[in-house]
Image 1 (tube, rainbow, N blue to C red):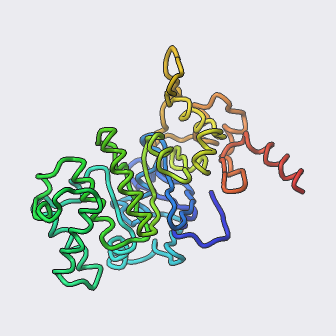
Image 2 (cartoon, helix red, strand yellow):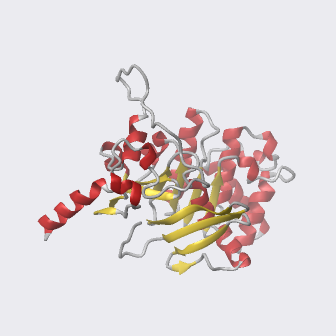
Image 3 (tube, one colour):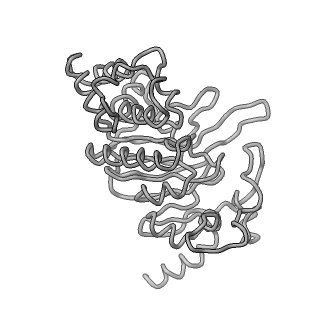
Length: 335
């Protein structure tokens, strides 16, 4: 969807992910493109089933078979990584890309202490000695806000609360000083106060290490507080992308407008909360044209026939036919 001349940290071009089934080949991602610069937080938002988590998994080569990356390219610091073999990709995941998932218990081995898991990762991806790796692990636990880290390092994961386990997972993701961190719903299972703490820790650690964050969530509140730019996904495509403040203040795509309208505002009285009628299409649904048109109050005949390209400029793009006339008018003035 997006094209730019500068060389970003992460560049994804026309990504397609498919899942072969008895009913045929189901397409979970259809031509997803975006970029992420160093030190930037890109929020990826959308309803459940939009393709957010599949996008993150595809970037790091963790699509479970029989699913496959059927098209597109992924570049990390200018190097193509989607065609690496599993051994090389495993080294990329551990050293250059850190991962934080929604459930920390999927990332932590319950049979090993958190210290062993941290030090083994550090030793695998750095030249530190075991003693130095342990000192580094304690330093990381301190940095993510684990109290009494010198003692807690020898505890097992079940001895930590949910919020503390998530802090440990962040430390695990950052222990090799990656240039990119992919955080997939890292705060969903936590209460609001812990959410804010986890986001603050993640942003601070990445700022100190000059790492970029791809933050996948369905929570626009988290996006508003955290991201520099936001990509809105619907039915396996990016429908709008741009600076977070502009997109929240003036959304262009009808789907983004619907998401913004669903967020209650302080001091605003409504008889009921707004909602987007209908539901996200299933992968088995065959929809011609724009995938959002069955739910869109502004749909036109063209929307039902043709899938729209991305329209826009200056880092803001919207895949909607409503933007076509506006874009042509702007180009005529500029010309």
